Amino acid sequence: MTLVKICGVNDAVGFDAAAAAGADLVGFVFYPPSPRAVTPESAATLSARLAGGPQRVGLFVDPEDALLEAVLAALPLDLIQLHGEETPARAAAIRARFGRPVMKALGVAEPADLARLAEYASAVDRFLLDAKPPPGASLPGGNAAAFDWGLLAGQAIPRPWLLAGGLTPETVGAALRRTGAPGVDVSSGVERARGVKDPALIQAFVTAARA
Ligand SMILES: O=C(O)c1ccccc1N[C@@H]1O[C@H](COP(=O)(O)O)[C@@H](O)[C@H]1O
Image: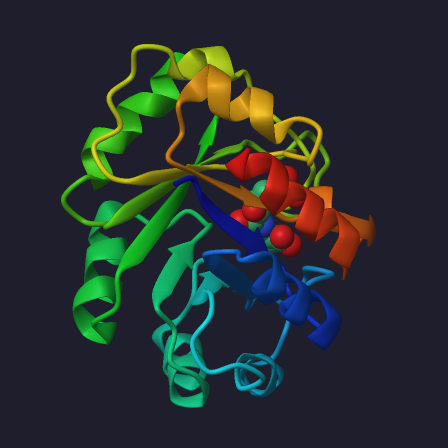
């Protein structure tokens, strides 16, 4: 079954909707410039609303160890998502030090970007393939921007992976058919305003991804 991650959950409505829709993973953004940012304490409060349910993912952008320590002291993450310029060595160091699986996000805009997968393959547990930020974007992700899925044709991705970037309930079916992705990740496409999740869109996205 297609794995579904709802990212940027920052309130009880969004968290409860993702869990009720049967999302496999929910993402908490620990990156203050994001409109979806949460603190370790607020993420812990949200996570505590439900025992079990979706796996909890922490999204970080070039994090210092101190931030990772603070978050992991507040709530037990199942997966660390690295969405910055972390090198393979840094990703491996985070995985070793914190004992959690690591998912590295890579921006895809041209075939050469996919060559980077091999550099990270032994350092991480999963990949997230996302669009590169559009010119002038203030965030490294979460920009509702898609990339050319055709770039993935014939590519062997050396780890389990999620497709991201501008997905919506309307496009996720076509994205899965075109790419054969084993999972998908969405943020903007399930929001009614930037940073505000919409329960109906979350349900529609999960339903469409599993159809
Ligand atoms: O969502 C954010 O605010 C964010 C901030 C910094 C780095 C990554 C971020 N989001 C990730 O980007 C993908 C794609 O987002 P979108 O669906 O195109 O809006 C999202 O799934 C997050 O993993």
